[in-house]
Length: 221
Image 1 (tube, rainbow, N blue to C red):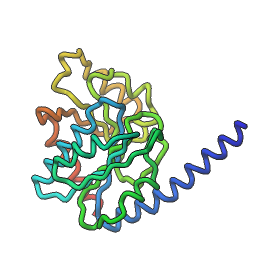
Image 2: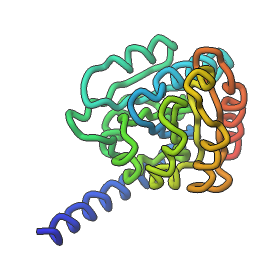
Image 3: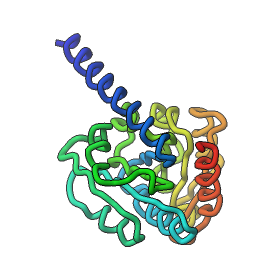
């Protein structure tokens, strides 16, 4: 039974990876920078993405988002307030997004009309780390309320990430967040990874984050 389970999982991942490669080719050909945002529930990922979408649009960028949740379209409706096109992906119990889900929900969108496409993954630090969605940049987010050792507890995600974002930095002092220890934990798993310390409420760190996005899109061309 164990052998069959392993073989089935390998088959599922292989199929996902093949479709992810096709998606990556489409994204590259269209010139759109695709980012996959992964975090645990309550990190502030939606607030961070909402501010990102709004500020990019205010600076003339063409942006869109796909939002993954087990149920409801609450986050999609919230992100739509930014003025960006947003589509909800309900997984109905599946703890991660898959390349097939992303491909299906892109139907009708002209990718060449976008500069950035953000994929807000299901709130989970385990399952999403195994599934390539065709993104060019995977972003791991953690908040100051979650504990400085989060990267050590979930090394697979942070090791596979291209950038890390610390959220809710404006309340760091109130929750006794140890910044140095958090950065040390991230660096222990992914040495040299770019880390952004942000607050969606105050806007702290957002300028650096937006500059990074522009640099990455320019490098993709």
